[in-house]
Image 1 (cartoon, rainbow, N blue to C red):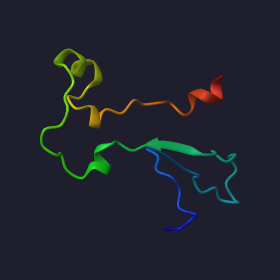
Image 2: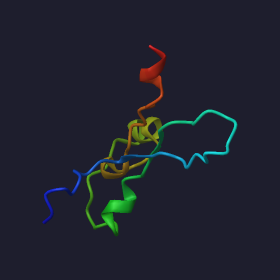
Image 3: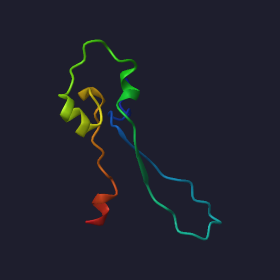
Length: 78
């Protein structure tokens, strides 16, 4: 393994290209979230399940697929 390999995170970021001829100021760093199902590959049998009422609140029946969205831009506002 490479030492410079980043640790796993579902929150990714990138910096959009800014042309030297662009009259607008640079946008800065942009963030996006990747869903947990991208890293699972397939749904194994006998996964743990939420209670049906809790599953309605979470939006999924399986805890493995639940992903709480944390707004990265919210920290800048405070």
